Length: 158
Image: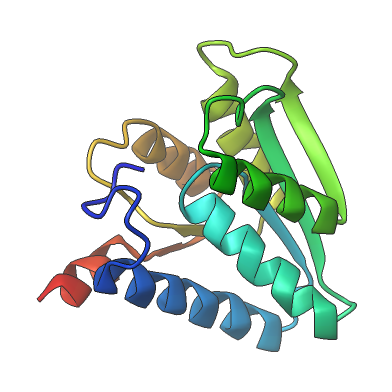
């Protein structure tokens, strides 16, 4: 939740970015991508997973693989976010958990695991997100295609 809108999902920039994310996911699907791997966090990961879960209702070819950094991740989230988190997990094709408890590296490990499974990485950089640059360098080393919506988000603010 390092984005300018924090938890205010009614913010117009948040809505526009979610629509942009859905657009990129849909474009990948039209290019034949069927497997989507999402690091499930309270932010873009949850937004992406919710969009993909909805698309799966009418497109059975889509596989949604959610990677959870640690089992108790959602324990202190708001009840609404927790419900969304568990509803998405129930809609996943597969849920992979990196660690049973929080560790200093479980979040970056989740990102790197997702990149290992990916051909294309969709990233959205939030302010103060220290892990994303590390993950993107890893994706570059593995020669993954990177779609970074961060610059698109800047255009949405104007």
